[in-house]
Length: 328
Ligand SMILES: C[S@@+](CC[C@H](N)C(=O)[O-])C[C@H]1O[C@@H](n2cnc3c(N)ncnc32)[C@H](O)[C@@H]1O
Image: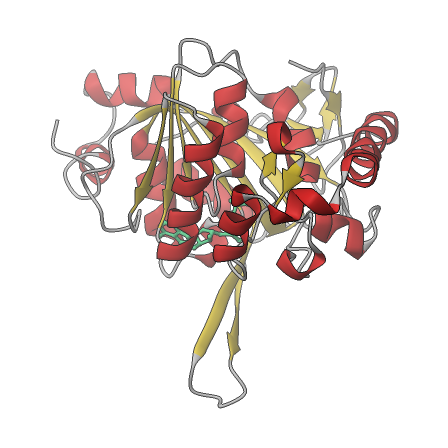
């Protein structure tokens, strides 16, 4: 794992790797200027490879026909290196929406972010992951499967991707027929209500909780299902206050729903996690300063041990077991 840098963040002042405020969680910068320069090189390398390896013949192949079949639902770039193709090889396949954090705080152009998404995210997520070789890992809200494919490449023991939009789910299943990962399973499910979803060692979730109809229920489920670690990557208000705002998007007819997005403050997220029984030192924050973006790496292992040992009050124990998770 990369050696993290300390950060002064809002009222949470850190020194020598230890919080001055004992009640606060440790906070680090998500990536420094030097690390960004390395990330930028890697990302430009991907775009350069696109240009260098592109051949019009590749667009006539069966794999290209398969990508075209899912045209309009490629929210993420999926690469097929053996075929010299990706889901952005033809500009008509690209969804020109950079998403929330893929410009890395405005450092990438919107066009590059759209062509790469979510490679920019992956470059800050990758160094924060533990060794996956003996871990089961699940991504909730995996869209076209980009992150599950990366986890499989890193040698995870087993990978699950959950997505509730049918076409996106089908596109990930199709992509894996080409890529051929055997220890990878995509599930078409609404994570909030599907209790057949099993706990995994690590749960990864990026820019999903804020789009859930019940974000706090989502957080509760995520913590309950993460046996060891929850990696929660999300847009936030960088504030210790308890605030929350809702934005919704509607089609021009004014009646047809398009999207919802909650913006929750860091203070409210941390207080809620505390209500679930997590200690401040079990929540480590990686902050993109000024960008309204925090990745939380949450150690859930001891929480489950405290629960199993009866150390939590009954109402906290029950909220993690009886109500929102599989009976054990
Ligand atoms: C903004 S996209 C982020 C995709 C991906 N995590 C990334 O970072 O590129 C959110 C995804 O989560 C999915 N999603 C939202 N709520 C979900 C739920 N309750 N169960 C399963 N998938 C969900 C959406 O359909 C969408 O594909």
